[in-house]
Length: 153
Image (tube, rainbow, N blue to C red; front, top):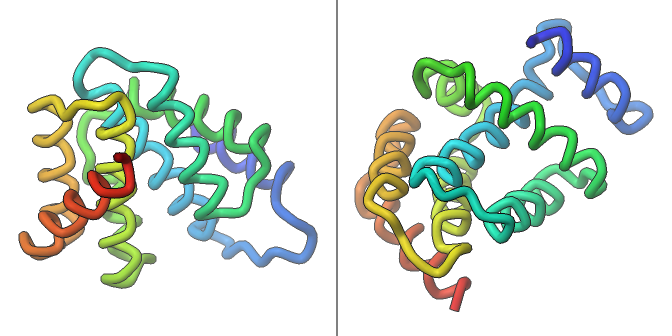
């Protein structure tokens, strides 16, 4: 899987973009996409509107084209199928995102959950777990939910 991910980023990186030898600069983008995908699938009712929300979020966050994002989402979906836990993804978030970026990530997770017009208990549970794994304070978890709800209406 790592080879496929690396190949994707080598093909779609903008000219001159610096990538560390470990590939961390793109791994965190992949981790972000996978966490968004995990939320969208957590209620066992993945809808196209949730995929569209993920596309919008990733285009804004990483300045990818829609084609690049669709391929990244396909890879993230495969990774979500194979993932045994969230730790490998949240570890990268903790290593590369500052606190403000983590708050934005959790808000984005809520935006995906709100995309279909309702919050399922499984969606809330997985967002709460991710929020805890990235060490976000409960007040920021709640604030992210409120902001996402307001932006979805």
